[in-house]
Amino acid sequence: MLKYLKKYWIYCLLAPLFMLGELTMDLLQPDMMATIVDEGVLGGNLQVILQEGLRMMLLVLFGGTSGVLCGVFATFAALRFGNDIRKDLFARVMDFSFEQTDRFTTGSLITRITNDVTQMEQLVMMLVRSLVRCSVMFVGGIIMLYRQSPRFALVAACGLPFITVFVVFFLKKVSPLYTVIQKKLDRLNSIMQENIAGARVVKAYVKEDYELKHFSQANDELCDVNLRAQTILAFMNPCVNIVLNLCVVGVLYVGGYTVSQNGGITPGQTMAAITYLSLILMRIVFMANIFQTFTRASASWKRIKEVLETENVQQAGEGKQEAGRKGEIEFRHVSFAFPDTPDLPVLKDISFRVNPGETVAIIGSTGSGKTSLVQLIPRFYDVTQGEVLVDGVNVWDYPMQALRDKIGIVQQKTELFSRSIEENIRWGKEEAKESEVSRAARIAQAEDFILRMPEGYEAQVAEGGHSLSGGQKQRISIARAVIRDPEILIFDDSGSALDLKTEAALYDALNREFAETTKIVVAQRIASVRQADRILVLDNGEIRDSGTHEELLEHSAVYQEIYRSQMKREVTA
Ligand code: CTP
Ligand code: MG
Image (tube, rainbow, N blue to C red; front, side):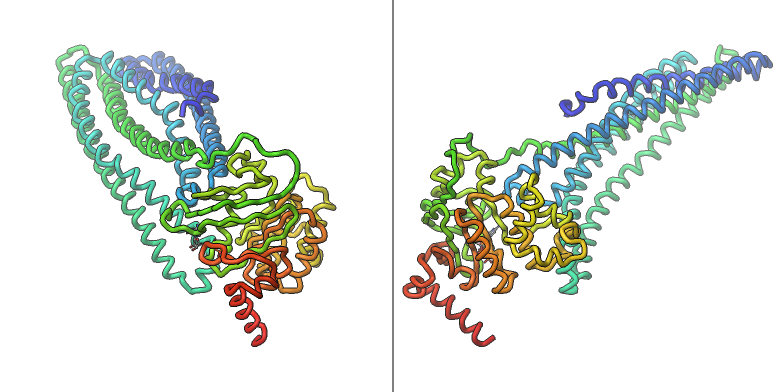
């Protein structure tokens, strides 16, 4: 945490310094008031009233200005500090592997980047303002009270232990609740995020009430814990007030008695003493607030640190990769299970080789492991056994960027950003020229529909790509991949939303323009794979057969079965 504050040390220093100015005002004012009352009002001396009044005005001006400056510097330090942490958190989250993002959950990551950082900002604000203010006021108040009369200080000394006991008691009860509150907030954010993103599904199934119940439950739970914490704290103030008022009575008694006995205490001093007394005792309550913020922030800091200290589990290599462009892929006895289900192998002993420039298709029923298989090539996940080689080098030995630069992958679930179509395509290669963007769109069979839109390439894509059809989204993400002109192109069911004619035109264009590029085409339709140089038939995580369309039709029972079922469908349709 200090690492983040160090940059703003000057503000952290200036804020408390100006705070001292404000404090001087607060501490001297009651004393001046005592002089005005004793010498001016009771002594009938107008001169003193005017003189002291003027001094008090100047003091207020000085104190007020200091207060404003203190606030400005403290806010600056706190917000900049939070800003830096948020940036680092976001960068760290961007660096997470798929497995790590899955483990933290999106909702929790959002809470950490927003709410937890806000708690930390409040802590900094409080440290540079309230902590200094509280301690100086507390000590200064005692000194000033003692100056009025040591007897008053004795009264304060009697009240102090009681207030401290109350405050400690309540805080102990409330502190553990803060961790619970943050967990509940995580859950609420997860539910919200899922439901807002999936609003279309919720509506399609008319599940609004069902999801509202789900949300309300989480919301109520959060509210209950918050209420519990606030109720406990609500009891604290009256208890403190009782002690405080008892002490005021004590001061009045001591003051009144001594004044009547002519014992050296004036009415003005008694009045000032009451102000100082509340100043001192109320500091304990403020200290409690500081402690609360501290407890909340330390729970938040733990969660922030957890993210900041999580290194990407995937250690990248140092750059042993061979120079030159080839595009060769080899799987050697690869087995794979997802990290959260290690006993459930998704791929079993997969071995195959794709030569540079070859087009290999992977076909198989849903859930057979096609997506899992292709995700191992750019290391979205790591193999459990065996090895994956690209251009003869184990993918583990590549620096991550070098590996991923070689590959253009169109994922099964299209993710577009809420920017223009052109920006979405250019996303694959920022420095691409306009001609490259339109070439990529042409190859992806996207140009026609883009130019038909009134705004063409400038048309804005709505959040989640909702303003486009499924097939249009797929084609834009294909354009985004091909614009990179990679050595290896991977299409994970990328033609599934295209009609057969468009899909055929897409593969024709790819074969023409990317003849040298290695292509892996994952598909469920025979029509999508029959042109491939080789087809791998995946069944329940294993490669059953491989060969050309004709070869497979001859000797692969699984392929024949897929073929027959699709032919039957086409005939009946
Ligand atoms: N799976 C999993 N955890 C994930 C993703 C998938 O446990 N994060 C499991 C799925 O339940 C499935 C298996 O891994 O049983 C293979 O999934 P996948 O590779 O996605 O199958 P595909 O062949 O790509 O299926 P589809 O045709 O439906 O895309
Ligand atoms: Mg899949």
